[in-house]
Image (cartoon, rainbow, N blue to C red; front, side, top):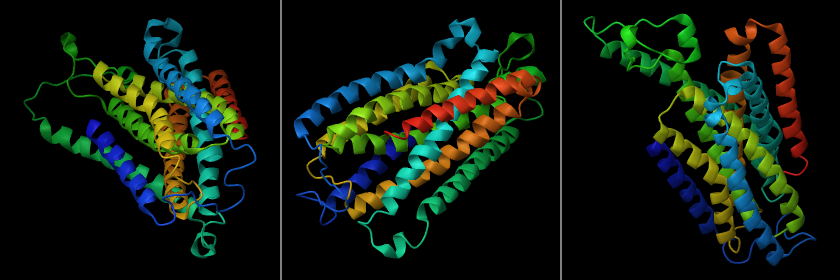
Amino acid sequence: MATTRASLTHFLFLLLSFILQTPGVTGTPVACGPGAAGDCYDKQEAQKLKIIAFIAILITSMIGVSLPLVSRSVPALQPDRDLFVLVRAFASGVILATGYMHVLPDSFDCLRSPCLPENPWRKFPFTTFVAMLSAVMTLMIDSFAMSFYKKFNSSGRGETSTRITVSEETCKSGHYHAIGGIEDEEPSEQLLRNRIVAQVLELGIVVHSVVIGLSLGASQNPCTIKPLVAALCFHQLFEGMGLGGCILQAEYGNKMKAIMVFFFSTTTPFGIALGIGLSNVYSDNSPTSLIVVGLLNACSAGLLNYMALVDLLAADFLGPKLQSSVKLQLLAYLAVLLGAGGMSVMAKWA
């Protein structure tokens, strides 16, 4: 997983290098489209707000993703308790609204910008096309990862290997123990799926976080940055809770948990710092950056929408915990609507 993240970071640097090397982007930013600088242009004030944003978003990101991980010490927030299910439903609603209300519209704005040629960018819905392909690719990754594990696991165990008995209830909760107190070295199928969900979900969040951080860091408009900071803090807090819940159910070791918490917490601040450093040469209205950011957002939207609907909401609502209680189902639906509604309201500023 660390290799995957290193490759992702290298890929993002290559994209940024491509943007900066494109003719018309270096030097003075290209003024294309309405209000390149805006009526509220103030570089010095914007710089102060970006430093505040860097610190505030870093702290709220760490709090959000860490809260579920420390919930084991709170009995009411154990993964098998009703309150944890409701918090997870709320966070899943936040992730769903992030894909539909934030990332997808941003991609439409980029790929339908007047700075791009009408043909082909406004003749074909590239945003929804790329988002659709991204959702299918996410399904493929999900499916192939499970198939690969099953084949590897079945071929790796001979008939003479020690047989492990796992009860149905234990498997569903993600815990696995052998008879006689010996812990099974092979994770259950449900636990493996939880780990795949956590990793793929973080991948989509990381891509989106770097993009929005870069946009904020490159902006010189305090009137835009002020509401954006508050909206992003809310966004990172509850999106982090959703990811943290997935990491908790994946039952990683402390080292892996620390790596995933670190990458989620630092990607948006990293994007802000990168945007500050490139603010003199980066133009979010240049054709190349519009295309790159638009396509990345479309990919991230498809991934987040798939993960929210299939791996988070459908898995929970069709699972035994919620199916056994209509009252809990109704409360969980209310939590989803509250999370999605709150995140949708934030779309007014972010």
